[in-house]
Amino acid sequence: MVPREAFSYRRDPAVPAFPDDRPVIVFDGHCAFCSAGMRLVLRLDRQKLFRLLPAQTPLGEALYRHYGLDPSDYESNILIENGVARFKADGSLRIAEALGWPWRAVCLFRIAPRRWQDAVYGLIARNRLKIFGRTEVCYRPQADWADRVLG
Image (cartoon, rainbow, N blue to C red):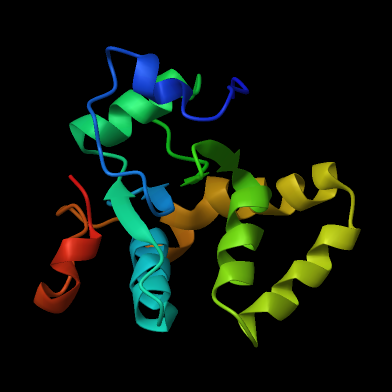
């Protein structure tokens, strides 16, 4: 993962323009676990803060490349908030924090060193398809959530 300054993707000609006025979560749209997690985010996000973007879209792939991630290996979600990208545990904990109570309680894991947080995240990410399965069809939102999904 290449750290970048805020909104650096706007200057990258390989990244198509997209609405970034609200946080965007880039996730593996073929992962059953990830897709279920994103449905949960949409359901719990009463303020309609987050937009979702399956990584398998041209924009999702371009963002993975922009941040130095392998666009065929989706072992990290990307949370882009105020133009800044967060990865792995940091992004997931920020999502939970934004969803409010009781989900905010998950942020207690921030007291652990970042490498431990990312190690747990990585263990789940590496095994998610074995445990939860893969869908052949990329994530599709319910009709009433379609405006909150990019790509």
